[in-house]
Amino acid sequence: MLKFQTSVRLSAVMPALILSALASTALHAAPLTVDSEKQKDLSITLYNQNLGLVRDVRSLPRINPGQTLYIRDVSHQIMSQTLQVENAGKILEQNLNNNLISVYALLNAYTGKTLQLARFNSVSGSETIIDSVLLSSDGNQALVEYQGRVETVPVNQQGWRFIFPSLPEGMQARPSLEIRSAGTPQSSDAVLTYLTSGLSWQMDYALVLNNKGDQLKLDGLATLINNTGVDFKNSKVLLMAGQVNQPPAPMLRQKTAMLMAESMADSGSPQAFQDYQLYKLPQRASLLNGQTKQVSLISSDTVAAEKSYHYAFQVYPTLDRQTYDQKPDIRISFINGQKEGLGFPLPAGTARVFSPDAEGLKHFIGSANIQNSSKGQKVNLPVGKAFDLTIKRQQTLFEKNYDSFLNGYELQLSNSSDQTKQIEITANFHQDWKVTESNQPYTRVNASQLRWTISLPAESSTQLKFKTELKSLQKKN
Image (cartoon, rainbow, N blue to C red; front, side):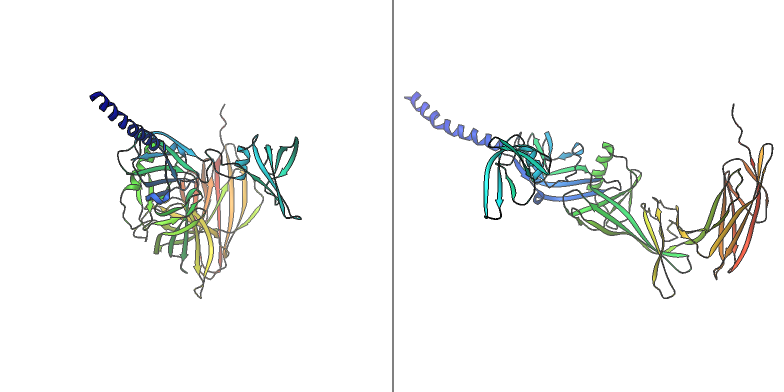
């Protein structure tokens, strides 16, 4: 009697255990899908070289051991080999599913298989549907077989359409990360960190030079570009200034990710990081796919500046019978110092210079590239050629001696403006040299440069005459 009751009890318990095991297996097998609606935080770092670092925090439910997790709304250009996943259990396997739905992808998937071909008759208003085998497709024409015949069918042409029986396994509307985890004991906030192409930024400066040419107003705009195929909404945005080799070293990626997670001041001022400069926008921003956004990054209303005129030429041990009629370069210069009105790192970018006329209307007067400029560095911007200044240069002497060459030059400098202007003349040498004669005081800048600084009163002209001796280059046996 006791054995019978035990058997009855076991018989009653067994279905429950089986159902429980089946439920557990089903739960284990059922994949989880997490999209951008589960996003809790987002940070992106943009580099100058078509590179971005994304730190994406997603809210996850408890993950069963071996359960597959699909994470959607990631960059279409993600570098999957750089993906790092935290707080999602031990990662057993991770895949990037980038087999996206398109007409051409479906045609490739169904090559050699049966599908339906529909043709609409515009005269009768009826549509004919037949079963056929897709033999091949080149994107414009498809070869199909039906009723023992092989025929061509236009792809994406009005009146024809393909009917596919089902969506091929693994094909999806948007890229996703597929992760298989050892499981988590409870819900968590997973952190995804990865590098991606399609993100970049560049710097553009607008400089307004006053009439005297001794002060300018500087506005620096950062242009952010997103071509990743996904939107980055309400994100912390950081900008890395400097040349970074791709791909960055793992340690650099880890430190960058850590720095992105840290709290930074909202002033927008740059912070030194690993020999680069890191800027943080003072407020969160949304950078949508295909969008180009401009944000103010640097500004100063009063920067001490200098406008100068420069002319340089080469001195060779050759005879030159030509006469050169040229204009000197206009150069706008400023020191990136605190007392001069700046004093913080300037990212490389294009500087466009404007200046007001007598009525206060601003006019564009030239542009130049600013290289990455650290504090205390001098920035030189050659923005154009001086209209009212003219330099005529010709060679007046050429003699060859035993071990040297004698060269003579004459420069006619003219200023047709109503203001005194100063011109810096530089002669560049490519072998040993010395000055034997000069009618203007000069400075030996270094082993290859000779320089004169000449002041020209309004509506005046003057001459620069000099002679040099160039040593012959000794040939090695």
